[in-house]
Image (tube, rainbow, N blue to C red; front, side, top):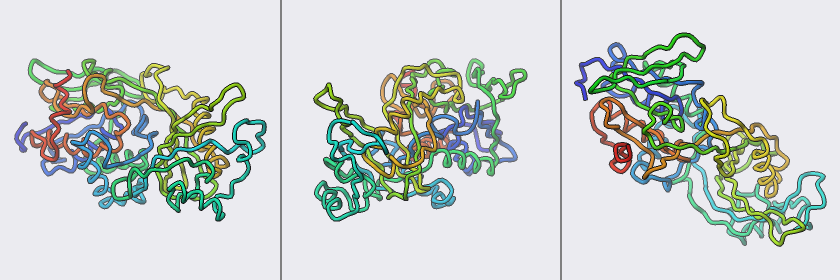
Length: 406
């Protein structure tokens, strides 16, 4: 890379969690001179407008890929300690478990559901009988917002020492704001073309968000962090998209800090011998909010931008109905959001793709699947080292080199 005394113009395409956190680490590097250099974060709609604002926010040392997870998990803790993350973006350690359950609860006033109908009444799970049922199934004592009679089995997946969480929207917007404070700037517009000469990138053309003629941002370095929209700006990237729906619920009382991977056997219908089994993920957040998501789908193609994502209300309602069968606190709580986003997947080889592309000055950080929140700081730290130092020193990312698949 160029010597530290040479002016550097850096453009990051995509204002999700990878792009915003990359802007932060680039602006924190000792080589960055805000009087000499420029860091521009180019975002089509809004910061954290896609999955970065609508994901669950689970952090785990047992996530993947293993080459970057430990670094990123540690950096999340360091960022929270440095910038008040507990208050600013809901960082905290949590328990995590796999729980298999029966869907035993009905909605208020519902009747006629076959299956374990005798269990459709209020379960009073904090009485002695209910607590003994939870203990018998191996459920931790403070996980008392799951219906006792619903539990088949519980298996711990992570302790607070190896599992944590953030609120993705709050984290991403905070990273962008901190980057701005350190000298980065945010420009709103849709990237249309990466400009390059015979040897290297020279800039990014974009259409301003609020209209007007196409413009160009001059750049010595361009980083593509556009998530599922990566192919729209660099077609050679093997990045596909999967839609994911989620809801947030304000429970009827504060609930303990657990992230749950569930398997729920729903009450059977009269014509069937077994009920459907569903697998929503349920994450309790510190601001008396519970996040729940269901399975992904590819029924609707990726739209042109995050503000055009279609929300299928029936899929959101399914998630609400499913979690309502195992928790009175969720069943009787207030639904505060029904939403959808697209997750980026690498369609050839292992992902994510982090590093150089084969075009001088063009770097990529994309294809993080469901672990984009977890792996954002590690990705950003490594990309900042690659930009300013010419090599990655914090992790061995050879297996994630974009040049393997492009």
